[in-house]
Image (cartoon, rainbow, N blue to C red):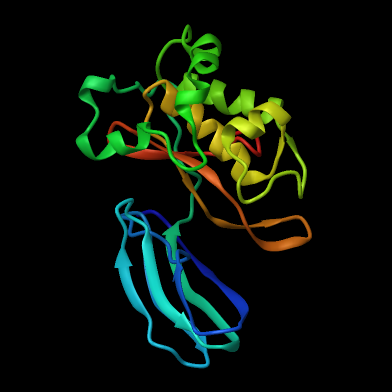
Length: 227
C-alpha cells in the first residue's frame, strides 16, 4: 500500500472595497482521484455567503460579495496525497489529433494568454521535426526554461505568451503560458495549473505549471524550474 502524506493547504486574501463587490475565487484544488481533501472550508471575515460552482474548464470556483470596507477571504484544508514522486514514462506516446477525447479539444485552442495561433510557425519550426511523445513535450519545457529569464515585475496582467516569447522575461505563469502555447500549436492539449509552493524566502508563493494529458493519466511539467 502506498504511504500517504497529509499536507496543510490554504491561502488568505485581504481586500479593501469602496462598495460591495461581487467576486469569484479559484483557489480550491480541483477534484482528483489521486488527492483526497479533509476539512475543506472557506474563511470569511466578516462572514458572507459563499456559493460553489464548477466552470467550463473544470475549475472549482467560489462566488461571494465582498462588503464595503476591509474584509478577508481564504480557504483551508488538508490534502491527502501519495508520499511519492510522480512517476514518469519517457516513452509515453502522443495521441494524434484525430484520436483526442472530445473534452480535451478545448485545450488545443487559443485563450487570453496562450496564443498557439500566433506562435504556431515557431512551434513547428522548433519542435515539429521531433518524434511525438513525452520527449517532445520535455524539449518544449527545456526550451522555455532556457529561453526565458525569471524576473519579478517584468510582465503585467495583460502580458501574453507571445509578449514573453519576444521579451524573454517573465515569472512562473509566463513560463507556463509559453509552454502551453507551444504544446497547443502542435495539437498537444495543455493547460496551466497553479499549486501553492514555497519559493525561497517567499513561503507559500503562488506558482504555475503545465498540465497535459497522456494516455491513462495527466502529467505536470514545470518549465520555470526546468522539468
